[in-house]
Image (cartoon, rainbow, N blue to C red; front, top):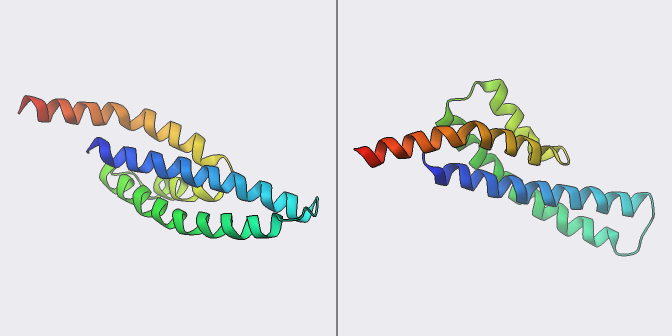
Length: 112
């Protein structure tokens, strides 16, 4: 597995996670505090999160298929972009798990 597959996933996990946290804060501001401007903020951030989540799904699925994950693990990683802050924790766990595999693969390619 190439390092670029993991890097793409990591970038989209952070982007999706940040947008979801911003969206959550916007919804809280809109409905709990009834702040002016929160309506347009949540609309813009919600649309951005929705489209970028689709890209996250593609990259996470690509990573899971190349890492040969079981379906249950794949689903957890795919759903992490829908739970505020979960993407950060799942990304860190996945990165720790796969960095060793990526470095082994690159060492094998370098020797060949």
